[in-house]
Length: 538
Image (cartoon, rainbow, N blue to C red):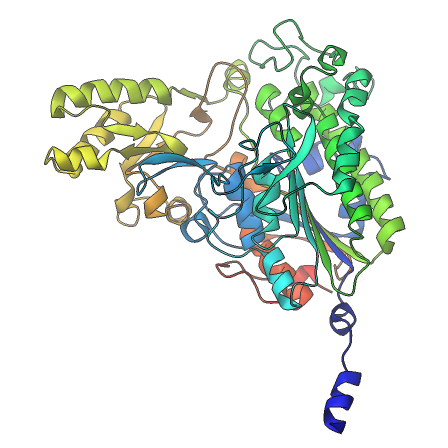
């Protein structure tokens, strides 16, 4: 009995025992090129977030994505699992499931119900399609679930996948209602504080401000092309061309448009701050985790491209808001009492129209048209209707049940597709995904393709486009390729336990989770393949 009593006296709270930070804040920027850190640096404020992190924190200047496709769901999952699609299973935002023979959305879950949305069908989301643990799961496991984990984003996948399987909550934005919602995977009703936040209808207040340039108009031509270009998309309507954008007409009517403005970042930050206060993050005995993803840069970048006034203005505003977020954390958590990392899920290509007018290589591939034409010709040749069922993620997926029923060798169909695709001017190469390891390829490309291949969720033919080319339409841009313009992302560390400095050596998105595990003295996620970035840690 005496031994038991003495043992009880030696028990100390988890955070005091590990001397870890009170809070970890993961900042994911949905679509940020690494060069924005430096290209727009003269426009960032001394009190802004980027200069604060780069000046007082640690910058990894050569951080790359080690797989394809470079899209949102894969990127968020890889950062928080330290793993790649071949292991964690999130092979795209969508994929064709070869077992169930249907298209699957990365975070869909029909076994749960939406909570707080316009219908119960809205918000049927969870992390169940992710096959490994996240760093947030491992943090919770390390102290018997004393740590709180909250995910916040406009996009559901930007909130759900980072927060992991055991998160206390994940909240995302519903454009129909203008509310943050969740699913029954986490809870059966929204907390009072979320209802209070939603009832503020902050979106309407932000719409009344409108989106005008935050800097003098003579500054933008130094960093971007003309304000109005025919190759830019028009997310606010065909008549909304160039600054200023009147958003007041969407008030009370269309809550989705906020995502395509910098005010989507404002909304996300305000929701994150509300979560910190209401959930008392950083006030317990264990390290808590706030996983925040900023979705608006992706919507804006897709529409206007990286060389637009809109993108410049977005990052100038975001820098200022990040600085204010850190000031908020200084006050509520304590300066040097929290750890932050900032990275992106992917970068982005320049708009092909912009490339063409500047005599740079780039163009488009019509994947939908290609699929229709191939299916017509394949029916004529092999007698099978809809031989190709999907062209997700630059891969062609075959209808294997029909092919097997027709007693036709799939290899002959795959070879026909390869030869057809290779004739397209946008295509650099095409080959069977089963032959990734034997096809003559650049070493880096081979590894990235292999890291993205999960048999049940991957296609039969891999298509590699030429640099500067992508699937898309005449306006706007996208990402998803292996090239550095899509795969080179920022990575900056700041706060508790972080050294001051930078490195130009090659690091990877998958190194973030194991580095956090080392910093917090916890186990790395179950599928982690990354390495600890030792220079970062004090």
